Image (cartoon, rainbow over all chains, first blue to last red):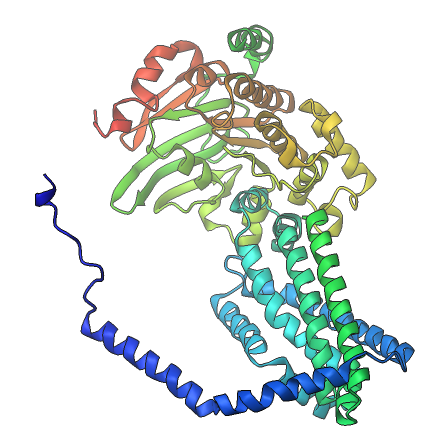
Length: 263
Length: 290
């Protein structure tokens, strides 16, 4: 009986187009490594240097810890302000970008494009633009985080609203409720768990990115970190990195706790 | 239990309400909302290649309880939705409460809809909100703004009225319970309370008993019938339960082959005959055209 069985091939024979595409992707990956210039000699030099710098970072220095903590607090406030502004602006934009809620397809696609543009331009680029526009300091950071939040929350808010059940919306529509009534009575309450989750992720994301914004002059503890590295003050730099790490962990844990409680 | 409930209904409420329905009488004035809650003329609707109705005519008398029955796919729900233009028809005219439904602009349609209570097969509540807030939403038929969005923001008189509506459906004690935590029957009763909050002149119910167990389904139908009687509102409902169609209506209209195939007082038909010709398992639902 087993003699009638045909042994299946281990691999399917690739078609020529798929094979050519796979070959091109492979070649691109190899050329990416070659052009980035990362070689074994760099690694051989870099790893000991990294060890040396890490050695110089220890133990972390508590010199000026009060100033660092205040700066960290200011950074977090910058993130909070930027996120709140971004979330407030995201909501109306998301309504305009959502299927079945947007007043016109042209409005929907325009707003979607704007949100996608906000999202795809990196936050450091926005920071550079706002530093030029409003000057050095936290205001540039707040505006950067606001734009970054709109790019992220605008999309996810719109998707959350699109995924809400049509039933309650239709029920209110059937009794003659206004569009605003439908949105506030049916869509927003139904999408609220997703809104909360997205908002908390935005805050976590903003807390992380607010740290690096200082490197381009957009305020926050990043300025302190840059100065510490510029002055080869690695022990203070390690203190700053550790307090940043602590802040990010606290925000993430608080976010996870709130998500579990509220959703 | 269901039978007992239905019998109670028949004896107490149907007899009390018997004077409200006049099956025959002087020829009704066309377009007069005091006589006709709705007049449908020459309605046609196609879904893809399938012609659901072609030239459907129907009058719904003011104050009557009308049951619409028919096999699956005969366009019963579509007909109810077309009454308030939740679904557009391809041809024909619809006059509802004296308004030409198909000619209304957005504002006019909203004003008309505010006079019509619609109870869906699924309760269509906002699950995360309380029963009371869902009922308060019913006031959006005549008011707007943030004070109609949540019970906690609503005016005292609106809250009071909403609580009264919950009381009327026997759920005042569940006012602050999240809608998603209620049973199917309770949720449907909250939907009825929301509809009551509208103070509707016409109640449309699209298989309100479909997703409920027999007892809860009969309770909801009994409630709708009683409310229609007490408030003098016209009731139009679709049901696959022939017992409900007979016992909770004054008149039964049966759809078959794209037209009104039966139009009779509900006292003149028996359940088994209706089930054979218009039930979900009847010939029309299996594709066999009579």
